[in-house]
Image 1 (cartoon, helix red, strand yellow):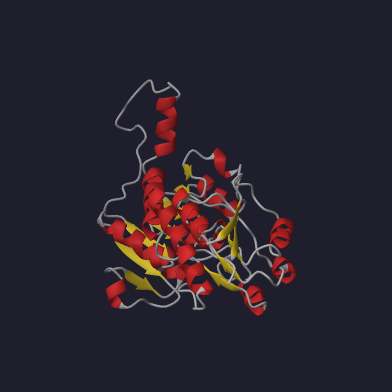
Image 2 (tube, rainbow, N blue to C red):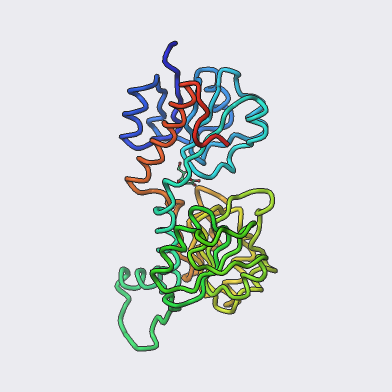
Length: 319
Ligand code: 8YV
């Protein structure tokens, strides 16, 4: 059989591209340019497989227009909210993702955002960097202590649990909400709450780790922000769609939130200019999984899925 042709939509790690080119005929987007829906549809008649990132959208419309030559979409991401899975599966296209391998990298960024927002890292950095740090007092730049505080996690999946494990190192009292209660050995001593509302009431720190779905869209809205303790800190390393950003701004303005740490936004790339006006918001440009080793692991996991598929087996991460 001829070697399958694979379109790699973004510039993946060198090790990934090397292995991909060794085993497949590859079309690589060396310029790393974002592809439009029309680009994706046009490319689908030239390839047997695509390795996209979360930035390429396989909407209902795109799914309907894909060429039958395309057999598998091996995502280089754990999140698949950019893919209309039922529509793609109905067309007989296999879709896979890259779970597990990015848990620690993403949990690290959640920890960084939590600490940075609580201890006013952006404000402090800006002050020193600008040369305008001209006084000091014990009352100066006082933040919120993380060690020993109560942490609420919404979504205790792989990344949520990796974050809980790191938070234990800060002696945090960990609580969580999940659609279903975890087996006790996976709970890491965390306390389960059967409703999001019950969890919010105790969450001095709140971290979001659930996928973006129709059910979780706007999960953190004005009503729910109001349920948090005063002066809470929210962290989001999952998806921007989980948060009503207008309500988030209002919660920051009123002091309901002492700060927020965000790695994702409703609009990406770009973010939200209104959020950028708050000194107590620590923002990063969707780099949760962006470490050298994790990028290699994600690329290799996507290629493992392709290898199994083209060997006539069900890929490990088929959805
Ligand atoms: C990635 C992500 O940065 O895995 C996900 O769902 O959002 C991120 O890890 C991105 O998709 C890389 O391809």
